[in-house]
Amino acid sequence: MGDTIAAIATAQSPSAIGILRVTGPETCAILDRVFRPKGKPLSQRENRKMVLGDVLDREGRVIDNGLAVLFRGPNSYTGEDSGEIHCHGSPLVLQEVLLSLFQAGARQAKGGEFTQRAFLNGRMDLIEAEAVADLIDAETAEAARNAAGQISGAISRGINEIYDDLMDITSRFYAVVDYPDEDIEDLQRTAMEKTLGSAEEKLGALLATFDRGRIMKQGVPTVILGRPNAGKSSLLNALLGYDRAIVTDVAGTTRDTVEEKVLVGRTLLRLIDTAGIRETEDAVERIGVERSRDAARQADLALLVLDGSQPLTEEDEAAMTMAEKAPHLIVVLNKCDLPGGIDEDTLRRRFPGISCISAKTGEGLTALTEKIEEIYAAGSAKTGEVLTNARQAEAVGRALEAVRRAREALSWGMTPDVILTEGEQALEALGELNGKHIREDLVATIFSRFCVGK
Image 1 (cartoon, helix red, strand yellow):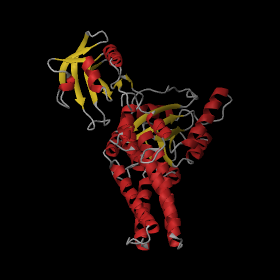
Image 2 (cartoon, rainbow, N blue to C red; image 1 turned 120 degrees about the horizontal axis):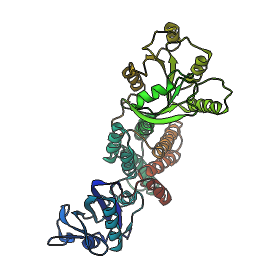
Image 3 (cartoon, rainbow, N blue to C red; image 1 turned 135 degrees about the vertical axis):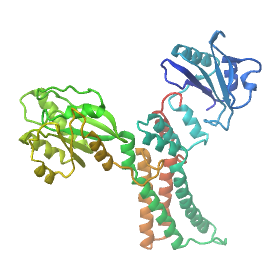
Image 4 (cartoon, one colour; image 1 turned 180 degrees about the horizontal axis):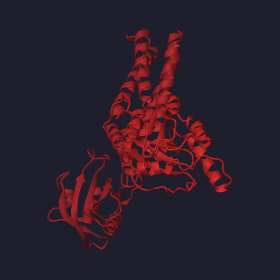
């Protein structure tokens, strides 16, 4: 990290304000070449104080008027000397200023390199660093709040406590073994049981949040099933609030899956509108029906759309059978604005959770939203303490299994060295989780998914 990096930190589209970031040992010298305030150079100005001045291009000509600020290390985002230039958000101006920074001695920052330096310099651990990317990518307010909580250390504090407890019993054991003549308190079975039991409970509770976190971050895979002309595409359009799918009276209009994300209440759904389930001689439509079956097998939630104005058919029955395989199912009885043609009592005996709606008028959509939110209501975990990252969940799982094996070995009366071998494996997994012990190539992979400038 001996060089200085720079990047545009705001979206490269016309806007009122654009920001360029710089960090590294030559930050002050580089900014002095590119930014010219009235009076003293920026490098001689007060820390964390905005300064008005001229922004210069590669030829030393004024290209904009703006503000600049210095964040001297180690008390900066990256732990190094850092700075920002705030100018007008013209993509052309921003690009010219970036080229000027390069000419002054900086190089283009890679994706996530600012945050990677913050991690390597000890300004944040790996859990907190990954939460930065999650916050940027958040598609719901709940996901944003959870990521913000992780950045502030909501998960890290608990992990560090478990790590320290396991390290304590491990270090005391080795002290007894290595220095038998010293007056060091021997490990006690009760203390070990208490430490391992507490670690198992906390890790188990954290891992249990991952299902909720995956939904929070990625959305619920949701398939809309039904026979042709039941109103599947109309339901998709009603939930989205605009006409995404083509709706006609011609059966088989939807011949392929149509995918969209939509926030239903506070729950993000990854909606897949499918081809109507029926036997067909049309080769293209037949492929669409098969894709519908594939989507149903992968969905967590099925919205089974039935035409409430007509009696059930064999095609409805085929769609029902397919929908029942999903972990969660809501039957959507569409066209409730028309005279009823379906035996609701018989239907309710088979499917207790039925929502009567009119995709055309919007009637019943609020009640449908409430049913969905009821299924995916937030658990007991506090905001910021929900795992959303598969890498982190895998590391927590390995640590949990190692702790469980240690407790089993303790209960079987095995020697302490066997128990503590498992404890060391738990420590290794926790070290990978928060970045205390992690391979350099994995660090590079993790930060490669970040956007440039962060």
